[in-house]
Image (cartoon, rainbow, N blue to C red):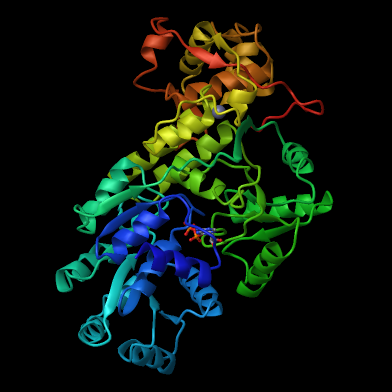
Length: 523
Ligand code: ADP
Ligand code: ZN
């Protein structure tokens, strides 16, 4: 059996051997077993259902939520001589009818279907006929985390996919995902009735990716310095909003980089043209929102830079996973500042989501902030989030390469919190720092803050160090941004012990100021 699989792997796909757990997964599913597969992006999930579909009698059905991804896969399979097709809303009635005919006639090895189409009564009865006739080799449920209500890609139709098991219990099912921490994994198994399926959990480590987190130091200079180290290489710069994408792409173009924008607000043709250039040419920097990237298989992406804070560690890991698929060194670079935290908190709080969901999103954001401020090995922290133990000291992240110094921030934190309190919990970090450092701005005078007990008690630290203190206080949940008053900081339930000097705090030292550093207020 394994010989047949290896033979197909070489003959059709042109790969000399299996990677990771592919061989075991293929064997298990080909033998009729159910499987839940967790593999990082680029790990080679597709083969885990494509080969069993070819080895078993009948057509393999692949549920996929992404139309673009479906089409790419089918295209690639056809070029290899595999009889593949897809059914989704892009086909007209005649096209769909032809695919259905092929399915019933046993002329297909693999059929990709959007979940909403699969679940129609009409399609289910078509499957009955296929099952009774040419046969159904397996059901593959791709991007299985879409079943999780708490994930970022929730698709309600995924919940109904248990119908496959109920109607055709003898057909093996394989669910695959690249994003699943332990709770999500349990949820997938439960929601898809895969509790008894064998789980194949690959290591999510991407040893060739170097992780770095820097604090925003104002303007576009910092990004350009980073990109200058990657001149001529292909990479992705992720930004928070369409506006940021456009302005950043323009700045980079003006600075001589081959940068292109990509976001959902652009017209489809321009977007497709930019994507094509990125895929086909070398050295294009794609500046994009997270609308870009799913299903993009470009092996030599040398860096992924986030110039704004992503929403969660899962999202971050998936986005950075697009770097270095070829196994060569690549860099994941994240710059963030207090402003990001304020923006994201605000966005979550003002969103339409219910209270429970908001709380969850806020917790995810906090976990990401914890990651950013951590002095621990980044790889250990990331993998730990996915429940994978790692010994640390990876030697390929900023914290391992340049171990951060930390300092006793207990007094500084007390001063900062007390300044927040004395000024009425109504001001942002910039003004608070002016008060602490005794900078007599108009605003300070207007509010009479030069008469407060916290006036000028923080001259021992410079502005940059104070920025770090406030950022880390927010990251640690000791201060929170007031949604109603843009960015105003206020105390939280856990601030009191610090304010009273009962809790000691350590902060990481601020990174050295880069040579060209300017005094700015980016936060
Ligand atoms: P995923 O879906 O897990 O992100 P893919 O199935 O798209 O990953 O595979 C990622 C890349 O790895 C593809 O370019 C694929 O051709 C390649 N690949 C997969 N399995 C193997 C293998 N056994 N040997 C060599 N290359 C492989
Ligand atoms: Zn490390």
